[in-house]
Image (cartoon, rainbow, N blue to C red; front, side, top):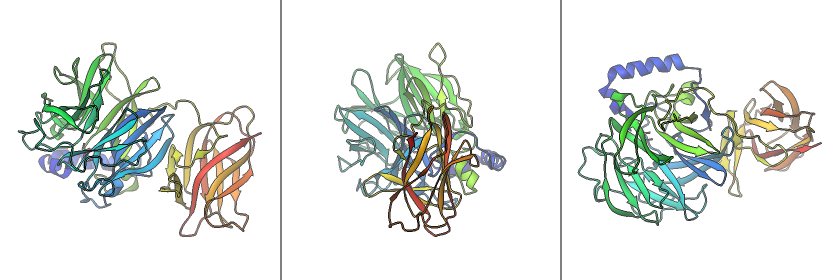
Length: 461
Ligand code: FUB
């Protein structure tokens, strides 16, 4: 949790981390996603053909090295193809949506009976639950108080317990469990959740977890239960795992899922999920902050790798890569595509639109978004349209294929008499066929505001 604390205990480790930071500058160690935000502690939900990631919002932390973990909101992003991620913005925030909490750390999200349940840590001092009818919120607090605190039967006695990092798990027989806790090998707890998912049943129990630090995760595959977690600084904050054939007892330590990720060098937190026939490991590192040259400890970002199993059910240790995930399918350019769905970017921000959606905002000269794997088919496009505000004389939105300086296939310019606010702009599209990566690049903005893009689409020949 508090990495300054770990660093004080392990000064040699800290020195090594600093050296690694310096060496890592200006190189990516893995496939960062939603790099326009600082996000951490990914929780996952597979729902209606999309995977949703919910994250601690590290943009709530200031840029200085002593910022501390002040996250008081949860951000959601989602994807249907594992490469292009849609930004759904802040879906839960304290105290706006939960008056008793001041922090919303490390969520866990689960769907049941048509509702979505989001569990979070009020820092390390208790666990709350929020509910929504939609995976993209808004989430509201149904209890007006903590779900788990030190009075919850079975939580205490514990030595220096961090009461946080919830992991909600729904078993095939309909019994739900909440795993939580941190800061000691005997500080992991698991308690049954009632069917309403907002109350607990009975006492919390525990099993011994070697080098347990934080970040509990539970998943089930082929009848095996996998409990995974971050090990402590002495064990280099790896993601380790245990297996059992029972969700609450009989766990045996099996080894390492992932060593300390490159360009992380600090606390580690992951989620595991199955999506469209493959298993994945979502995690955080600090590569975006390192690249930007800002203090990285409290400015984490999300990344993802595929996860594989051996025939005996044990997990193949992850080799962290820059680009380890394959796109599933392709983007259809002939339908409305939200501008906030992207694989990579430079210089963008996102904001809420009046209709409750999201848009990209304030794109200035040479800012861009990349959309990976757009399939133009055999006929190709004839027109390109985008809903944009701020396009004025001297400013254009160019669409390039393949790379940032690839072939220009469309260019939208101002007609000189645009009304204020989002307007539909349409221009001619060059012939292009098959699957391409697209770059939407702004050129010539020198105003303070830049341009906003809500969505884009092509019209087929
Ligand atoms: O993000 C705050 C804390 O850092 C989480 O609760 C821990 O798991 C660690 O990632």
